[in-house]
Image 1 (cartoon, rainbow, N blue to C red):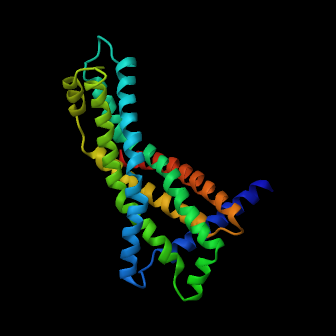
Image 2: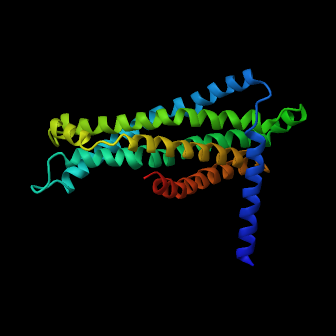
Amino acid sequence: MLIYRLLHKWLTTFGSYLILMGRSITRPDRFRMFLKRYVKEMSQLGVDSIGIVLLISFFIGAVICIQMKVNIQSPWMPRWVTGYTTREIMLLEFSSSIMCLILSGKVGSNIASELGTMRVTQQIDALDIMGVNSANYLILPKIMGLITIMPFLVIFSMAMGIAGAYATAFIGHMMSPDDLTQGLLHSFNDWFVWMSIIKSEFFAFIIASVSSYMGYTVEGGSVEVGKASTNAVVSSSVLILFSDVFLTQLLS
């Protein structure tokens, strides 16, 4: 009985999600207004996240380089192996998957709380009464804005991670900058960069759409808005982890 109830709840939620996405992903009624909100959402969701991406990527790149140097380097291994492993970790997983998990906390809660507040204050109901497709007007610019800006955040994260690795070489004197450069360039495969970008596009859609659904369907008062923000972050993170497994297997 418990399994049946859980299955029924998940299927009902998934069906409601698909219906909402069907209403959202349609041709905008007023294209000029859509462009205005599209640019605003790119700035709010993407540009405002540059600071946290810079901070986390720089220090994670430095820490990875230090850990690789201390725990992997040995007389039996080439000196450039530290740079090589640092590059592979940053390109393959951190700058796409882990960074999107971090952004799901910032961006996802932002979207869910914004739409949830509009729902409980009846602003969304007012749009519906005026004949506006509120789902398309509010959700589509968020989805398109985050999908557009996410590849730039991923590439920026890669660059900052490598900059952090160089900081350990020049400032911390953990290794020679020439050895680090040789490792970063060794057997470089540009498909890894494209794979991270492709994965991040899927993750961006998950973050924006799931968080929008959680906020748009809020029922109750301000307490429910907080719960919706939490559910948005948790659901987005779980879906990102699941999809990361399938996308990595598919694209590798």
